[in-house]
Length: 222
Image (cartoon, rainbow, N blue to C red):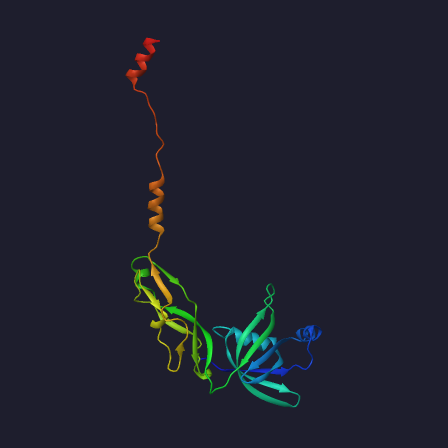
């Protein structure tokens, strides 16, 4: 199940570009929390704390308990980190979106897929393991959301595939992604075929040589 972490936040009362620049200089990241039948609320969180949460997570879709300070009061809200914006060059955290959720209502979220084991077709016949899906969309209650979905590819031979319907999921978790979609498959390596094809396309240049007898005859006639 997803590890629920606590994250402190503060309600933002001043908005606009200048305000955002100011809080960034203070080591804060602007954000917003929305959903769960509540009005969107602008927030700011410590950049270091947010980076630490993301560094220990399997994906950016992390379940957090927001402790939101609003003056002398504070409230707690369960939320998913929905989207994180990064600076393209400096990898600086620019903005974060939180989606507030309820423990009594199911949510839909993406979960990373991770394969384990060495496929039979790879270790025995030199095949290649190819991924068609890296994430799985699931529906469940927030507290049942898995960190990651692991698939065992040990018995997968060349020409065989694992589909979404083959993935074992924890109790209470249902796949929303089409069950017929391929997750991973083992294919034959084309290295040997390419070498053979290359060898067949190499042609030996034609060498024309004249016979000694013909050469002497032509010399005597001239």
